[in-house]
Image 1 (cartoon, rainbow, N blue to C red):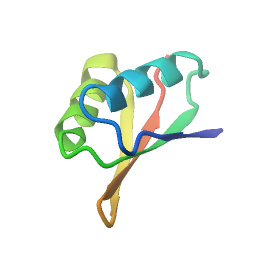
Image 2 (cartoon, one colour; image 1 turned 180 degrees about the vertical axis):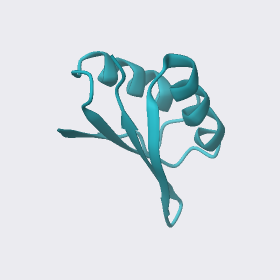
Image 3 (cartoon, rainbow, N blue to C red; image 1 turned 60 degrees about the horizontal axis):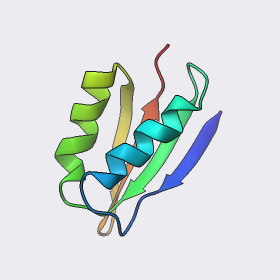
Length: 74
């Protein structure tokens, strides 16, 4: 199942903190699609995924907004 999180307008570290909280409520294998426009998210989100053991499946750009697809680990 894919869940959405709009973190646009939020600055570091809020996008990652909101993603962590949202992923905590999901089942293993669920996916979170997060939109963020904080320039630091390009570094923060992949680092968070690597540290937490989640899989960053995709990162795309839509104008000034980055879209991340994260799969929750066990």
